[in-house]
Image 1 (cartoon, rainbow, N blue to C red):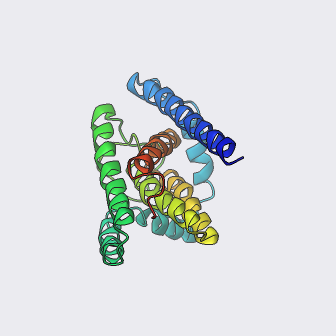
Image 2: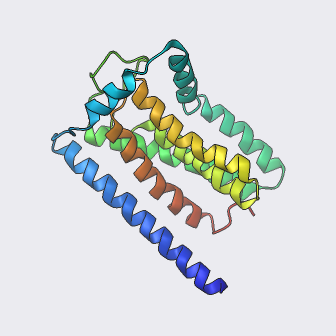
Image 3: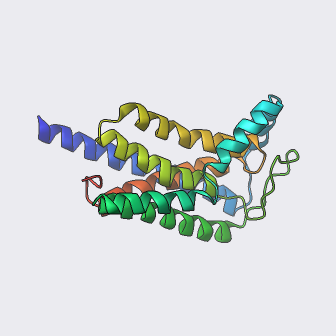
Length: 207
């Protein structure tokens, strides 16, 4: 029964990687060819119509949770985990964040997609748009944290960490600094990166 469950788990992981790869390739091909997406602007405008001051503040706070300050937080968490002899966990978290940032920077330079101009953005960004760096950072940090917490049977916290990833993605579109296709691409490539990293640091990085 255990072997059958492991086989099904492997198939599910392979299927998830395959689906994420297909999604990213489809999106990146259209971005590279500058074909655009008919659904990008309508989704952004639909979200924009719900704009209120309290939602503005909420989504700014959410987006900042995956911003540059996250590096300082990771360093502190890494030091604490290292002192607690949980070195694989510390290294995996730091590697996940650093690798994701490097990969995102390369992809941004490669595709060089301009930022959206659908409506005046609620925050200022100077880098390219595709894919979303904040979304990839959220996947690398909060996504991996969710997996680690789940394996430790911290189910509630794991769900909260997992749900934080799409919230960060949504905040980027709401604030007008990314197209929906940007964040979808980030979720796809971030999923692939996270799975590969987990295999790199053994099947149980929390051990």
